[in-house]
Image 1 (cartoon, rainbow, N blue to C red):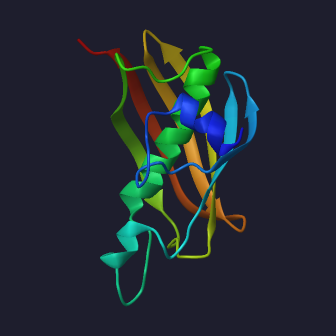
Image 2: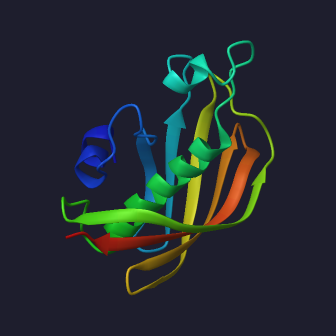
Length: 145
């Protein structure tokens, strides 16, 4: 799935769209996506000017966006103006290595459960095959008035 297809599925836009490409998807089961990390990312101006490091919360956000793509694909849908996809919880979050400009963050997400608009995922992100972050994420899809 290229960036043009991703833009039809996710409501996020620059500077908050954190998935550049989907490498593989197994409908309703797993997704592998990537985020290219460049020095041009706006967060590097302040995190940290002397040693740029991608904020951990943004690594988790990238994983959540990949998870949203998996959930939308499983339901044959995409984001709509009356639907919001929220974080509902994070468990077992572990940061294992810093992510820096020039890295390619590979996002792996497995759907564990899906019921009544609540999704549970097992996620991890790697750089060059080395674990950068892992977490179980819970997300919820809700209609808004």
